[in-house]
Image (cartoon, rainbow, N blue to C red):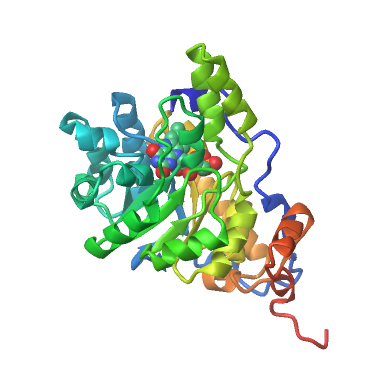
Length: 358
Ligand SMILES: Cc1cc2nc3c(=O)[nH]c(=O)nc-3n(C[C@H](O)[C@H](O)[C@H](O)COP(=O)(O)O)c2cc1C
């Protein structure tokens, strides 16, 4: 958390691909901007807008303040939030309050607990995961997939063998939905299908183009004078499936809700992600930057995103989230190339709502 606030840990040479996704501006929107309905129901929960704050932190006193600010903001705005990995608090009860503050400050918001998938391979089971859920009275549990981070970390846990089976076992035992979540390297259609079959009830694609965990580890290694590990982080800095490509892949592959994240920075990108197929969108790094300043600043940043989303919807004549999913989208450049080479249909997005006789 400290590194990502002090140093630039954003992707360097890989972009999200949302710059290659274009709306077709509608000169005749035929809707009233004031009457646009941003609400949506996902996982049986009604969100005032299709926006959540992605997993960031927990475990330290600093983290308590950040979780508190985010929770206060999402409660005020009717959104949702994920807490960071709860491993530290599962192992040390004294740290529970750094996470539990989220539910205290957000009694009605949608909250997502967080445990690492690799922890399931290395001994965590139903007991530990239930503990994480109960700690924040969570509505869902994210199982994070972070092979990139573990692979560039000196102390990384790199045995992922059997991870899908562990997720499947867990899904049978839990009464809360499992969201399989990447952490900045994206999810491909093949993996998404396997996760859906294993019982995941949602997928957070968290693709490349935003926060890079290889970058974080590069700076951590630099701080420790570990030049080999620093180089490894540097080489893998831009690794991953760009967010927009991952989002199209996954939303065409599965029927469960899809959360778009990884480098989403403005409400226009939120709108693009929804139009392409996301059910919810999520941001982490920009919200961390706001949350260190407090709840008020977090509310301001989230409110701006919501207004930008509303404007985008107005300009394409979409008066609801459902209507936004039917507007034409043009996918160009590397994103179109990626998807075409991978066998996905790009043209159907551009032809939406168009009569053949145009
Ligand atoms: C400081 C920081 C800590 C994070 N910690 C976690 C974590 O504990 N668990 C997790 O699933 N994702 C974690 N993430 C990843 C984010 O949830 C998200 O997937 C990723 O940062 C991409 O989104 P962004 O580009 O909007 O930051 C963290 C991100 C940041 C910036």
